[in-house]
Image (cartoon, rainbow, N blue to C red; front, top):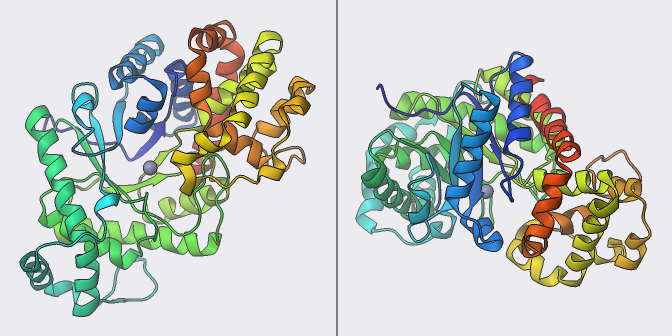
Length: 419
Ligand SMILES: [Zn+2]
């Protein structure tokens, strides 16, 4: 349908905490184009981040529009209302054209018994041995399993439909991209569960373009994947196969793809993701929200002088407030307090020491994942510094921009999309 906004095959979610890095982020997408791969930028910022920083979705839109204009980017780009729900969606309606409807809180809530029966009765085709092209073993879904899964997820899908309709009423049909996210929950969804969830999404009439399941393993903020990579690889590949199957079986939008809420820097699974995309000729949306903020700190440290002093000050303050800063992210940070250097020690560090501890280079002996994770959740400290922080971002723009673009392209875009 003309006028309908569809998400490109390859897209990357970019987080820009202080709305100063949209240009160097976009330059990373330009580099992808130079390498022959079109990767569409999606600037995302959750309500939680806006609240912590005191920023607004309109500012994210402004920064994106400015960067796109300044660099003459003539391909699509989007602004994502990340992890919104009925209570928080309002201020995102105007500035955003991509909505990540977070229904994780609704998983496991009871649904109407009649809806449950209706759902199971409505999908007899899923109850046979189901051979899905590209999946090694047929799914064996019986009525009991189907009812269990439906019981766990139907209320969540119904809520997603309510949020979707609320947005559609205000923005108009086809005028935005819909993602449904279920990643911020305790237990991962298996490929068979994903299939049943997608059947429910189709029944609910949500024209979903991306879905963010919770995958196996830990996706902690700012550090690499923790878990069995071979299990993840099979699960991801099966999920991609399930999506292709669900599109043809349930009539979901043809471009439907997985959204990986990476929490940044899941280097060890980027290879398997790339391979699965090649195998199925599939697309993916990769969210990498927090990594750019840490490149700001690296750039400030690298610039030296007042930049390095401020980076150290952010750490010292983060160290003092570590309990409070980590609280909202308790499920996705894994900091060993014994590995956190005392601020008095850090105060004596040269720029190289600060950068080596912070930069996510697993082969560097000085890399300190606890140090990095604490700073990853410490953007509130910089937000409180206000213009003192922002002015230095402007003064040291060139050094920071080089780090932002290099990090996004070399460490994220290249391994996932270019290969
Ligand atoms: Zn997420």
